Image (cartoon, rainbow, N blue to C red; front, side, top):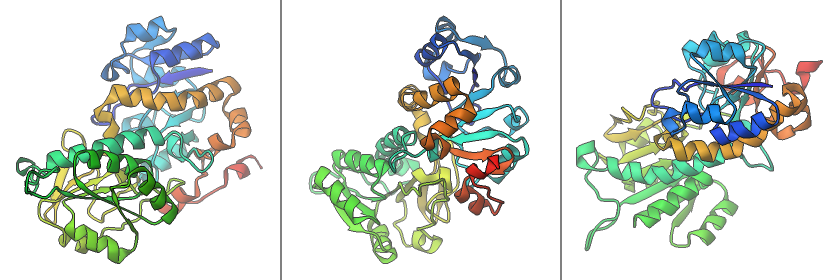
Length: 370
């Protein structure tokens, strides 16, 4: 297999699809790996390290895409990359297509086999989303606490409080991997933490792990009540299968929140939890709507690219090896978990949630071969 790792061009994205040690594992098995020059710089991996691991360094994205069949990225292709993709390519990266009709249409038109990290499912878990959810969850209380500062547009509340002064109220929506990690860090910062979730068994599990964190079973009325008291809201709601995040926070609800409170919307990749959410970047991370500071950075773990790259590629490498060793078609036949990651194949949308979100035609993956 010829494998290509392009330099990420999404704004403020410094992660990379493979590390030099990953390249070594692939080249030892006889695969050819092409690395676009400078692809690893932002994560602390030099061209020399890749070359010493057996990779071939190529200049420019066009040369990279024309040389490789399996394209391993971190984030979804940007507009300038659409024309570089064709029916010979298997694209393996985070896609989050539900809010991205233009990209989805380009992948369909170019007949790319597009496999999304976020929809690969194993034993009802999302193994390639988990490492980044963990990091985003751990980051969220820190970025929220920073933006609570008066100088950042916040209400001027210290997350931990002080002697005789109450700590900030942190509301975490969702008790999955990101929610658990956000709760653990926020509690460690001495905040008053409440986690709201639809699933009672997951609440019970979280209570055992973090007994001093408050919990609540979700209802729209309970969410609204908690929102009005919150200084920080962290959204970690995730719908499996690549569907759009439900808009649980309306503009009217947002208007009832404290002026200068902070919403960290980790779910922005899938459209965000609030009617007011829109994607931001690390260099321009916030905007204010209805008096609430919105932090909606679409690639939060990219702030710590070396940690995030190593954590991500630890999870993705076994799948890259499978695609390389068996070839795309056979790998997808052998591994049902990997097949669940296919969002576009042979000019068809094969992920039902994406097709529904974009009001486009859907064809089950298994029907692509009939």
